[in-house]
Image 1 (cartoon, rainbow, N blue to C red):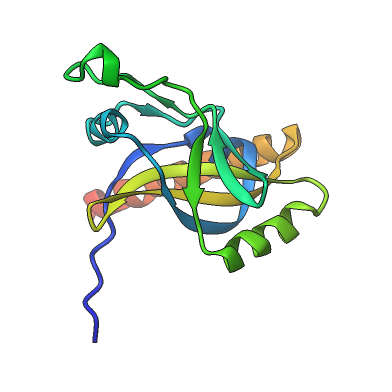
Image 2: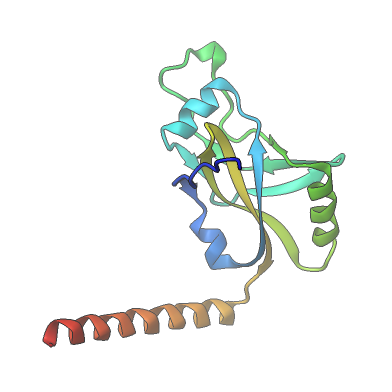
Length: 159
């Protein structure tokens, strides 16, 4: 039986995606990075806010993800911070995703970047946009959960 590596902590999380979208499905994709980019990702110098993935010519690409230039790399080997990056998925998964994305209102958003078996992986979410009232409802739910946790905590310490 093959031993699975434990899940790694995310290097960067796109919190805005969880706020603006309902995540219906999640996929894990490899990401093609240059040497200076991987050094920056390991240092945690990644911003996924506003990033999105799109299919072009039967391949998936990540757009508008900002990976800061690495200080230790020379100018000649430096990368452009917001260049499009190719995502690696099996053909079957890409076809399944393309079928889902054709539905009205679905988009593909990056959720986080993490390392698994020393390789950078990107968690993608098939997402549906939230309306303003959905966001208010989610905020109210979160606040009520916090209040409930406070009351439970106070009752434990009062006993």
